Each structure stands twice: as C-alpha cells, then as structure tokens.
Length: 202
Image (cartoon, rainbow, N blue to C red; front, side, top):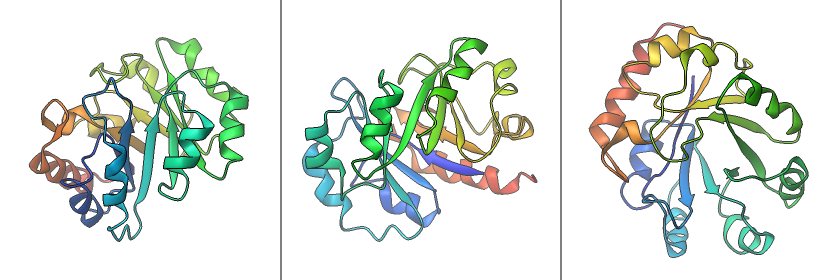
C-alpha cells in the first residue's frame, strides 16, 4: 500500500514521515487552506534527507511562473487540485515535473474523467469537498481503476483502511483524519495509522 499524507508542516512533521517511510509527503500551496505553507518554508525542506520519500507540492491552478520559481528543483511531484485541463497537465509535465491530477468524484460518471488525463503520472480520486472531510462512498471505491497509479482520498482513516484495502485500493491519501485540530497533524495518530497498515495482510 502506497501512502501519501497531505497538509504537512515543514518544520514539525517531515522527519517523522520520512522515518516512517511514508511514500509521498504533501505540502499545500493554497492561500484559502488552513494547511497552506509559507513560500519561505520551502528552504526548510531542503535540509531533509528524503531517503525514499517524495515531496509533493499541492497546488490549485498554478501559473508557469509560480511553478518555475517555487516548485521545480524543490519538489518531486506537483499535485494539481484545480480545474486544470488535460493539455494543462501535459504542459506542466513538460516543464520537468511529475504530475498528480486530482479528480473530484460526485458520482460514477466522474470516474471516467481520468481517461482524459493520460499524461498524469498519478490520478487521485477525491471527494468534491476540497479539504473538507467528506467520506468517499464505498460503492464508488469498488468502481475505481486498480493499480498503484490510482490513489484514493476522502476520509481514509485507521477505522476503515482494512475495508478500503479489501476493495483493491493500493494507494491512499490522508490529511484530516490524522489531525488533532484543523491543520495540525497528530504524530500519535500517524504512528497508529502506520501500525494498522502494517498489521493488514494483503
């Protein structure tokens, strides 16, 4: 199971996640978000030895100028969480970045939208609530494409991860379920979740 934790604090959370071998560490660049980080915090990320973890810049409709100044050379992936078109995803990838494209799923018809984004390295299926904790309907989880290219977000937690894994999901993205308060990751919850993941037999 691949794991991405989103909305991390560059000072507080990163070393723990690296030590726990979290695959993808997400940092939010979206001013409306309580998890938004300061551009100066990018400098802090450079001090870490990432080992086998990847750093992800989570953006909403970023401009080329923003990407070139802040993302390229500092992050391994850019996650596109806005209304970026397939061509826009391709253009950003051509700048030299691996891309994660978020697909907002309200019903089954939205799932097929991922077929338009063939150039995205990873497809993230999420609920339409942006950073609001909305549970992804279990009936739709079973209809998602299978494989490590496809990730699931939306109220994934220690309580439902076993059932989610039984649905064939191989890649999960968590944020709010690992917080003690909005925008503040709880290290105990992170450790408990990883322990639970390790207990599940696939």
